[in-house]
Amino acid sequence: MRMTLHTDYALRMLIYLATRPDAACTVNDVAEAYHLPRNHLLKVAQTLRDLGFVETTRGRAGGIRLAKPPAAIGLGVLVRATEEEFSLAECMQAQGRPCAISPACNLKGLLHEALAAFLAVLDKYTLADLVENRAILGAFLGIGTTVNLEGGAQPW
Image (cartoon, rainbow, N blue to C red; front, top):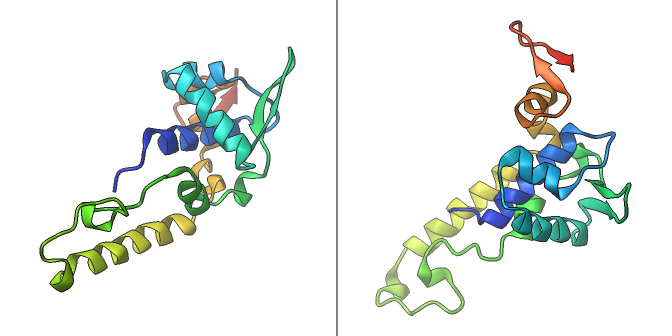
């Protein structure tokens, strides 16, 4: 299974926001940090807002921030909410072409089991698990920290 760019960007945006828990940021901040298209990220931010993962504030002091603590944002929940299609093969799609061996094929059941396992792994983790190394992530994203040679984070 390959996640859509929308889900990929949603995960990246949430990681960015979780590295700045005390400050709102802009979609431009996220776009610049990851070198991603701003227009795509605007749509992602809207989706995340509609799903209740982020809060948005308009105006000069506005921006986006997490609406929940990172530990309350399950990765499985997020992926299920942002992915439109979980069909791993055409025969699993509602609008897919019928397969000649469908009545005797075991592939469909195996793929359903594989998808369930994939989602079960994601269900074990939260956004907090992705940002345990917040200081290092912040350094790579240009967010107020730098990493010294001993691996510790230092404020800029």
